[in-house]
Length: 356
Image (tube, rainbow, N blue to C red):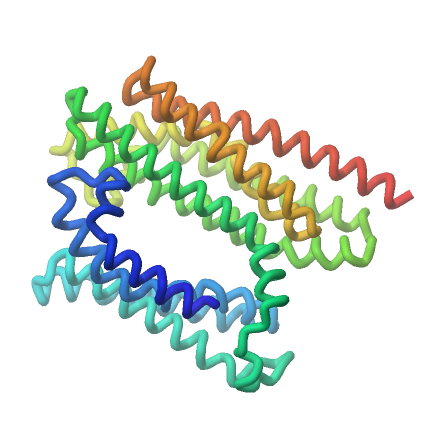
């Protein structure tokens, strides 16, 4: 499923590359670079999907060290190849793209090699023949994650186009807001990676104990990883609010780019203002599928992105211009956090009743 869907997506990206880039809000100045980069990195989509999907299986097979090594190896190779391809071989944006694809290939190969060394099962060729029932169950459990990622995609499209449209009416132009927002998104990935790592560790604990009807242990696990998420969120909030300039400068901005840097600093502070409560909402989205309540996780994902965020992204800029994009994110974070708290309290109440 991973490989076949990866090949299909890669093909579609290459066929509809320019319309997709326009849909994502690419400006005329950015288009040549975006097209060149995306055309090459599309070759890596099957490898990326394979390694991303197999990684949890290897962790579940009691080999988290190997799965981490596969991911880190690809990342380190990318770090090494980037300067070589970009500067030494003078390939520019092409070099960055090929470095990414080669690194994705390495991680995928390391994941594939592990199939011969699984501890819990021994695979045969017949195991890889698709069974519709299992495929349907996989899709059902993964639907929440799909909604979350797909809604992120839609939000990105709306936000980029909004930034371009309102940026062209401001002193920043169409390119600067999109570039600054991209850097802020990359920076926030650090936060999301930490929270996701926390969730991945807590998920099997919640699933096992919920299935064993040990609801006290489930509640204890929820409290523990929610507290941890809040602490991480608070630390990252301090970094985003008080040290935005050093964080943004890590991505290559110089003191000469005052217009860009000024907007990027303002965007980070406002766009990520509610980071200190975001950890709770993100954990909730993943917790509910872990106890076979995927519908609640889907509701949280769907409402935050499509019910709250997209309408706010379309409405708020009408009154506040470019700042409206940031205010839309702040409002959607606050509303989705409130909904997550309500659903979590309801689940706690039900588990308390079952435990009696």
